[in-house]
Length: 387
Image 1 (cartoon, rainbow, N blue to C red):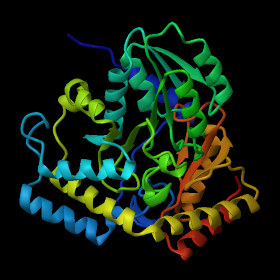
Image 2: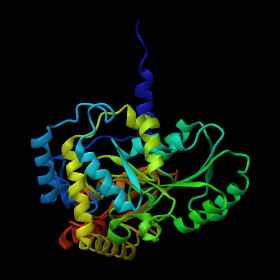
Image 3: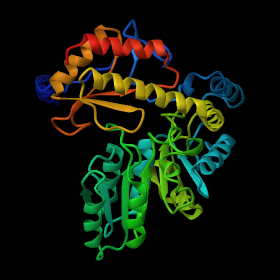
Image 4: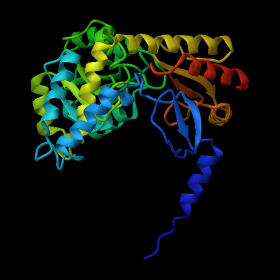
């Protein structure tokens, strides 16, 4: 039986015409302040390795030693044979860092969100989701079969209105990014927690881009607001500031026990490699012991942001290491990104569906391990490019 796949070419051409076609680039070096991209050495402004820990000697040494001891793979799901003792240490460290009773590690942040949300909310429940939440949250809401209502971005009054209309639902779950990955702003978490308490609602915070960067000892968004120990379910990832791989949920011990028994993305996934777990543990120690990394990160962000505004670029009011340069059309964002690449700077263009229509942008991210010279090279490149 033959099938007609001509529609695939049509779809590709449609993406090309709209300025939305994407392609993979090849990286031939470690993600430091510069990378070798498609054979060229360029300044890297598109990495989530915010603290540079994926190349830290202590992190690499921990990964190597774990590989020697445990091998390259986990050999099975965590409920069968893949629950290395390294998990026990890592989850205890994560719970301590997040100020919660317990934590559970998943294979990715995406798996964590699409697993925990269907456990917290089912048919007959209500999920209230920020308009700019990450795609993994959106997909988790779809999988839950709960009713979903979207509130305007960080709009506490709109959320309050929706909550006031939610009394007929069995359970209510408010879910939000902590640091919004494409805008760089921080959720007004204390106000949301106050609302939740008044309406008997749960709060789930995706702290992927806040953990390791914000708050005392890098504890993340809740720590940034002094909310450690509050009744907040915290999701995060080990692939951003931690520099490894995986996701986690931190919360009460009963919640973690329930996830072990109900979260499909946990039950039906092979455990992470031992090297990854050991690397994450070493990175958590460094996050706690080297606050100067966070200080350097925000110093670089301030320097680059000030320079770009002075050059006339339009930036969103980010409060973090994520600096969105808004160029509106996908074609314009792609053109500016390619021009910057020609100048020796990789600043990726972000286009729909990752961001709303007419908000295409360059999503710049600095790293603690950038040198002053690399930041200046980036500024020089933006000076040379006409947006």
